[in-house]
Image 1: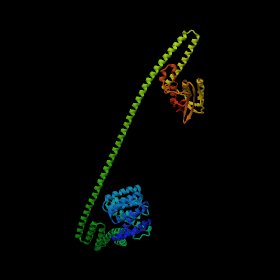
Image 2: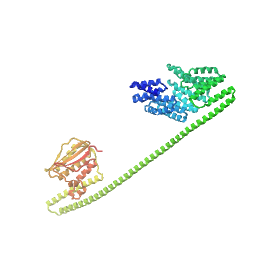
Image 3: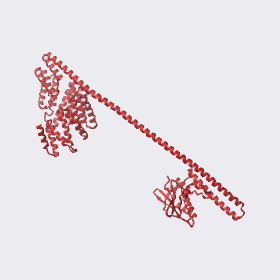
Image 4: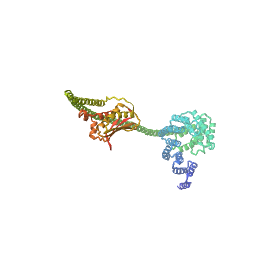
Length: 634
């Protein structure tokens, strides 16, 4: 506790700026794999907040996990890995991400959770292929190959290791990674009794070690001491396999030179196992037993519990010495240990497989439920869409029904109006014919020439009036039956209104003057005859109702339209008069000489030519009649 307080005070005395972070990092590197390193890493992690210090934070996370990984502290390594992996993913720091995942998956393998390790390894492989580089994919291949090798799936281990070696081909900075793959290839080949392939992979590790030292001359010769021990031990095994004990002894002496540098005692058990095999080969059974006891000690440091391979080797030494009873006891004990380990491994594997079987079942059930939910959503959406479509069709049917009802009412009303119109016209024509017949009889009976001339003039005037009314009625009928023909052409409006002005001058009197207002030259597309007819009818209506004053007319352009207007000074139309002018039934209810269908015809012609007409508007000096026509007929 006192030591921790002193170290904490020393850390807190560092500079309070960005130099402090670099200083902490240097301290971490100097205190590699010591208790002090964790103190420095904790301080570095807590103080490296903010995006500008993300590299220091990543370094702290990665080395915390590496420290616990080397110390085989599985619980702390897993605890630190959760925020670390989340941080690496968020910051897209892929090298740290996959390296951290590899360490955690390796821990799963080392504590016997092979199925979990393989599952996590495959997930890492998929993620690395999706977003990582070839080196990251190779990292995933290694953790899968290592899990397969440790769990006894040697063929699968060979396949994944060879895939990893192919991915690392040509990468100069991946000597360590290639050595790890060659180690798995060699050990898996030994398990499959492929001794010739073992020595090939061992030679590959030797070449990688030599290349590494050539590219890194600043590293000490014993930098990879544990791999040099492993290489020389495997070469010694091969020499013993070929019955060359002297060469095997030479290889083992070379391995002994690296024994003191292997601070983790990684391959010391293998070194003493190989020495034991050598002494057994040369007949020194006591030395073989002593080396075997030393190998068992180092093996016990890494893996607690008895190892059946140690018992098997003791049985071989006892048999060579001729102590067959001890050899038999050792073999019996070896079988018991092997059976116990096999049962334990079988139970562990079965438990893991059951867990994954349940997980797979849950995943399959989840997918089924997801499909059912999606199908239900699609069905509900389809039903809602069908319901909306049905509502829309019902609404359309209701609208069509309403429109048909309105159309029927309008048709009935139009039929009634037509009947009334025909009835009125029949009555008016009968009255007119009776009056005309009376005039004709009077003309025949009258003997005085003056009265005969008077009757003849009156009769001629009535005939002209009847002819005009009949033509107007025909025009109204053509307009309402849409049989009126129009001939559109380019019209000079100034010339057209001047012609109308000249023609209507005869209708002007001393009391009611006709005036053409100044107009600009303009051209439009219209039927000139019908347009002139509209203007004449409006002016004629104005003259009929005017007793004094002035009638002026003209036009003006407004955008893509032309506004025609007739101003009547001293003339004011009442509402009744306006309704009377545009009501054909009201017009035909009076006598023939009082029928004025000009305004009815004018409004119909304007609408047929694409224009619009409004009721007369009162002004300060009288009233104003306007209608609007498009410049171009569509």
